[in-house]
Every structure is written in structure tokens, then in C-alpha cells.
Image (cartoon, rainbow, N blue to C red):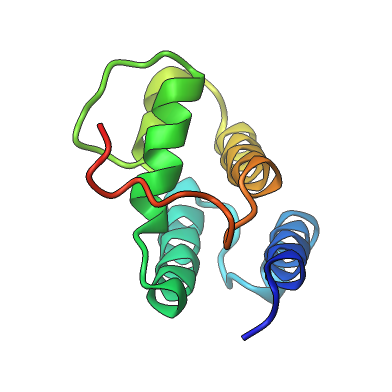
Length: 118
């Protein structure tokens, strides 16, 4: 497996491609929900590789960072609630910003697992 920095750089590069050229990755790139489905699958694949639940880790990080009430939902579902009234394109940009921020602040192989932490 790649070292922590290399894997994190690859994740950030892929997020950049997804932001700049979404049509290369997701066929119908104008839907927030389609981007969510793709991104959650991508994160789940990385989670399986690392034997961790990164969707849960990102969600807990997002809740803490934004002082949101704790709900049993993922960060991808918080964004349309927190940014209600924004367009699909704005929501997609926010989703990619949040995901990118998580990986910049928490290199994937060095962040402590959030499992069991509340």
C-alpha cells in the first residue's frame, strides 16, 4: 500500500478531477444526489482498503467543526440542510470543499479512527 502522504495526495487529486471535470467521472454531473452517491462509494472503497469507516469519521469531524447537533446522518445529508436554498451547483461545490478540507486536515492514514468516539 502507498504511504500516507502518497495516498492522501491521490485522494486530493481525484477530488480535484471530480471538481474540474465531473463529466469524466459521473455521467450526469448536474445532480447533487448523484455526486453524493459517487462520493460515498469512493469513500467506502477507501474505507474498505483501510478497514475504517471514513464516512462516519468525516461526519463526526463535520459536526464538530460546525458545532452542529449530533444526528444519525452522514455529512453528505447535512449539507443540503445547512445550506438550504443553495443551487445544485453550489451544493456540489460545498460537498467537494468539505470533503477536500477533511482530507487536507486529516491525512487518511494518520487520523485516529472515530469508531467508538462520540
